[in-house]
Length: 166
Image (tube, rainbow, N blue to C red):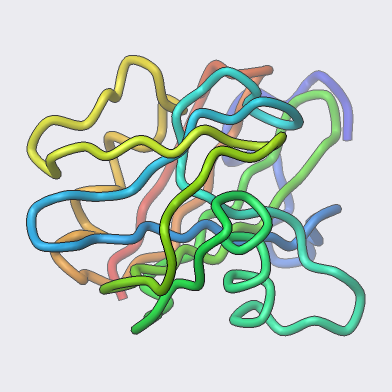
C-alpha cells in the first residue's frame, strides 16, 4: 500500500487482507456501556471498547473473551458478533475488527496496565474522545443491526467510509 490511498476506491477490497484480525467488545448493562481509556498501542489515549488482536489459531470469540479479561479482569457474557470493521490506513497498516455486543460480565472491572474502565450512558458516549468512525456504527451496534463497514484512515483521521447493513 502507498500513501496514494485516499478513498475506498483506491483499495482492491476483493483481494484485501488485513495485517491484523482483531476484536472489539462493547459490554452493555441496561442503559450503560463499559468502555476503556487505552493506555498503550493503537489508539492510546482514546476511549474505545476493550479488544485486541487475535493470537495464532485463536477464534474471534476466544479472542474477544481473552482481550476483555486481559484489559479489565472480567469475563464478558452473552456475546454476539454484530458487525465487522475493515480499516485500511494510508501508511499500509490494515485491521479487521469483529465487533461484539455483550449483555453482561463476571467479576469486577479493574484498571490494568492496558486500560482504565469507564462507564457511560449509551445516549451520552464521549465520541469526541473516540475514533472518528465510532459515531457512525456504534448506534447500529446498540440497535443490533448487523453491519460490515470499510474505512480509510490517515493516522486517526477518517478519509472515507462505507457501511453496509446485513
